[in-house]
Amino acid sequence: DAKTTQPNSMESNEEEPVHLPCNHSTISGTDYIHWYRQLPSQGPEYVIHGLTSNVNNRMASLAIAEDRKSSTLILHRATLRDAAVYYCILRDQRNTGKLIFGQGTTLQVKP
Amino acid sequence: EAGVAQSPRYKIIEKRQSVAFWCNPISGHATLYWYQQILGQGPKLLIQFQNNGVVDDSQLPKDRFSAERLKGVDSTLKIQPAKLEDSAVYLCASSLEAGPNYGYTFGSGTRLTVV
Image (cartoon, one colour):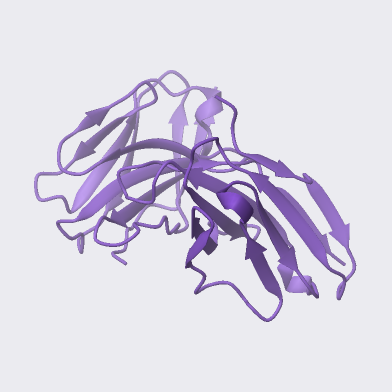
């Protein structure tokens, strides 16, 4: 499975935008880029996913580099509730595309 | 839409005892997964079902862990006998289909403590 690299931790201030980076230099053309987050004492929660084009939904935006070797999850206005571990995961459409979690980025949001 | 239901929420057992966890996925979701999450780590996939058939159980310690999904709906995960290192949160997730264009919905998990 192609690997992703994320910073261990990041800090943000409440009501400011947050840009969470993810490097995936060995991504293949059939890999989808998925983001999940896990709030304390809860199961992971789907955030967003994309293949080549940038994506927006009610939770976040996903910006994918033109060469697809990196991507950025953008939270437009962080709230205290966004404090969580954020996982960037590649899922291969050639097989079952199972979700393999790494260590993720722990996001702290300061009031 | 109702989420993925798991029970119990917490379980404490002694080592060498057996334990079972139950999962009810979202209605109509064909694919069901069990994950193990040890404190401080990301979730680790144990087994994947497509309807009531096993797709991938390569990471399931089959000498002590077993899982079934009867009638392609509810699923149970069993540990027998439990070891101290099985202390973890056991997460169930479901997806409409297995492909990577579908997101997973996770339950809140069962926190197992083996003493």
